[in-house]
Image 1 (cartoon, rainbow, N blue to C red):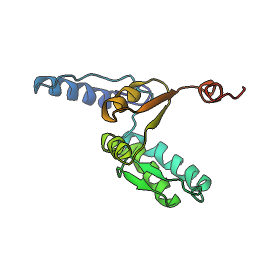
Image 2 (tube, one colour):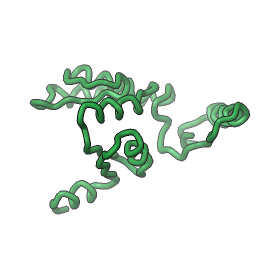
Image 3 (cartoon, helix red, strand yellow):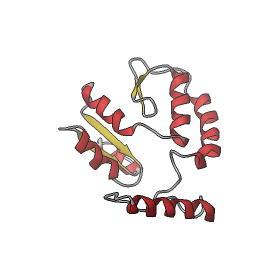
Length: 151
């Protein structure tokens, strides 16, 4: 689910109906989720377009050896323009998150960071990538103080 400020009554009713249908069809779990925005769906298109403009100005070249993992593609990418396109698409389209985590684990990635409020994805990563070390980063203090820095 998305916050009321993001949804019209019609959108909210549609999401609630989808939950009812899933339950009626035998879904083990179907519920509204308390999220901050309607990520990975068309409701994010306006915000995604603004983000794409900002990213295009900020990402001119990939750092040496840096490779992004595109959740929309479930593969590694290193072209700055493709990174921008993938981030833009991922914000308002379905992503291949599970496949991306599995891909990274199979490529030898062992350290994962969940950036944002909450730790839901951290638990999912641990289930998908055996032996993964997952760090949830929810505040500037998490970044600064975990690595010996100062505020």
